[in-house]
Length: 145
Image (cartoon, rainbow, N blue to C red; front, side):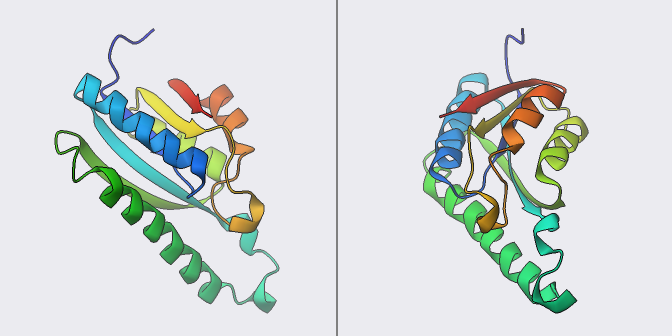
């Protein structure tokens, strides 16, 4: 068991549970004087077969939505939580794999994520990702309900 979590990754998709996960991750980072990486994964599999093969406008729209999710969370809490170092990333790919790979790349101590997400229609991080991350992550995973 890790005594302190210094490098925390929180996966968000705009759902209520991911906002709760973000709040929990902020509190953990404060208690441990750790840094927090906020990540949103755009599920590129959602674009296959859409818009007659021209998915670029849809991808741009989804990327803007992902930026909006991160910006909203950054402004929601960080103004009052100045002692938490926060970075953010928007990644395109398979959400479950990208979260695990990002955790490895960042040498993450803890991944915090919601139990479920918005679902496939949102074209962002999907709830089924949680089980995969719990089983494949290189570190502890906190699932927030």
